[in-house]
Image 1 (cartoon, rainbow, N blue to C red):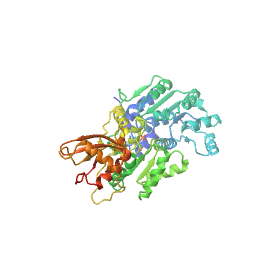
Image 2 (cartoon, helix red, strand yellow; image 1 turned 30 degrees about the vertical axis):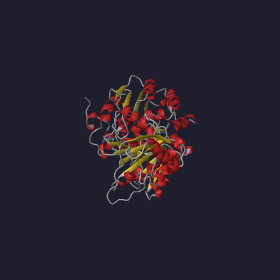
Image 3 (cartoon, helix red, strand yellow; image 1 turned 135 degrees about the vertical axis):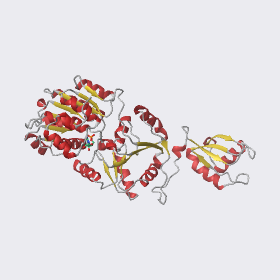
Image 4 (tube, rainbow, N blue to C red; image 1 turned 90 degrees about the vertical axis):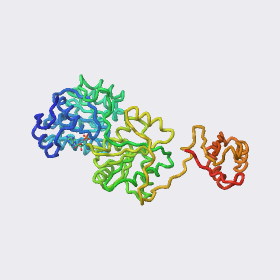
Length: 470
Ligand code: AMP
């Protein structure tokens, strides 16, 4: 059993001092598992999500293995610029006064300035694959001197199509002695990559590859596009002072649209997506981190690996297209053991995907009603009748009428509805008559109109009180 105190590992002085300064008392689980193995120079394949302390799990052994020589000895690759900045900042903190030059190398920044910095000599590079390749092709990074190579968030990197880039880099790491690969989930691509890039690695993960899902409450609300804003309003209404919400949508366009809508409802929010210039993204993040906004709307790419501790609510405004994304998204809340809640909006045709997510990761994501409106609060957005959501797969909506077989026959009721509402035969589906009530199927395109007509006319001298059955 490994030791579970930082002090017992015999770490270098500057690192221990830095850890002390940070106030970290005990290593996290992944640190206990990974650090002693990685310090021996053994390859590690680790399963850990952001928030588990994985940066230090690979960061500490990497820092220890490097010397302030001014030649690149270690390379850490991350999927996004934000994550690269975060990782490099944490490694800089962890090295304390060791004096290593740790440089971030990512796209969207001034090439020449970056080249100059690299030419001055660096010891550790933390970067995104594209810019690292670019800089190496331009002769500013010498890949062959690198001994330690780390792939952070490998699942995401490979998911984003970085495999050829990573392969390009690995092929040129001719002096590579150790590889550390970290991933929250293990889809086939990551298993293949770990096979390809590592040498007899020690796996620090649960045997069944079960993902570490944060301890947070997860709920799904069945709601169509039309009422997502209404449901979001309900959740926003239940937030306390100081709570922070991260909302995910699947497209950049939707990020912008949603932010606009929130503004219209006087919700102060910011947004983050891959098309924004880097410095703007950093400013937005910094503001959110400081608590300057309570709501951030983002795409997966932009929010990947975000290290913001105050996030109490994650909302999947759009359910992600891939099961892994779900786990990454909800991992933005409930960090370092804090409590959090994750809400997913699920349309009728997405229930299958929700099941798939829950089954893949063994999660409980109950379908619940939107939260009640707190007493004295005003509804932020009005609920609308969402015909598409309440129709069945044949496009029929079921309407209940307060008339039974004792008072009418099916045929005369159907004839009357067709005549009064002037709809074609085909707009009416099955009629099921009970003793006191009747259900009538009406095509979704005519449903609203038919209900209005039924409400305004009397049938055999009485009201039919039409009500939708959802
Ligand atoms: P990570 O999973 O690397 O993104 O880390 C999540 C957060 O936990 C970061 O803010 C780290 O600084 C912090 N952290 C990492 N290890 C520890 C530890 N052993 N004790 C307390 N905080 C930690």
